[in-house]
Amino acid sequence: MNGVEAAGYAPPTGPGKPASSRRWWRLLLAATVAWAVLLAALTWISVRNDPPTVREQRSLAEAGPVVDGAVGELVAAAGDTAVLTPPRIERGCRITPFADGADLSRGVDVFVVAGGERALLEQVADRLPAAWRAGVRATSDGPRLRADAGEFVTVDGGVEGDGRVRFTVDSGCRPVGDGHVVPGTGAAGAEADALAEALRALGAPADSIPELVTAPCPGGGTARSARSPGVVATSAPVAALAPVGGAPVLRDLAAYAYRRGPVTVVADLSGDRVVLSATTGCAA
Figure 1 (cartoon, rainbow, N blue to C red):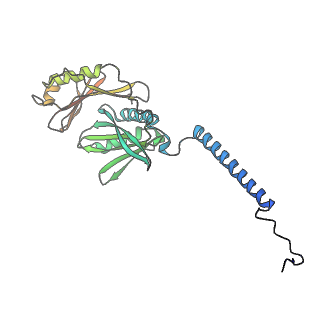
Figure 2 (cartoon, helix red, strand yellow):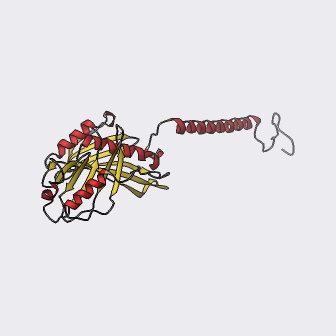
Figure 3 (cartoon, helix red, strand yellow):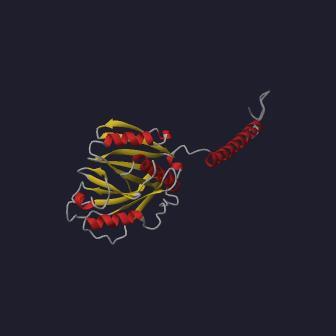
């Protein structure tokens, strides 16, 4: 003590870190930056080239054509009495806790003789593309069809009532993007004419222009449906419509259908009012 240093004792070099520690931190920082750059590059390449792995990677605008095409496949598989229903977009679903989105769904109603609902579901499942892995199984709500149309678009079918089966194609919750572009309908044609003729036969006004709903057919062309609001028939609907068409395609308590050239006219008789639709379908 008293200012005398012990033999072999080196005085402290001050607060600075040893040179080896500084080199280690510089190497660690360089490695971290290099890893971040590599990760960013791999992410960019994946986004541009890899197929989507979750639904949220495809916007509503990108899913729309898949949904529309699936509807056309259903119309082709279901046959003459298929009727397209208008698209529905529901906003407000949650993609993440911090981002909302929208859900696109489209439907096809098919009319059959009561008791033939399961047979129709199985027919459609057999005719859909093999890649969809469509199948029908028994549930507590009756037989149901499930299928995967690709791009995370689901297809569901079930019994809506006696003699009526409803198929629904659903995009699931998606980023909105540019939104769903509704397929062009063109001018009202044979469907509108056949619908107006049926309305007149029932004694209902036929001067309004019906809303047209369309979907692309898998083999080319377009399926088109025109639908009326419910009307009160002035006489027995089947008796009034029978002279208009030829031999009926379907005659049952809940529905009556006939062909008028390339158009199939369906009268839904299940409610208090008669709902008429006229559809040009897809070739099976």
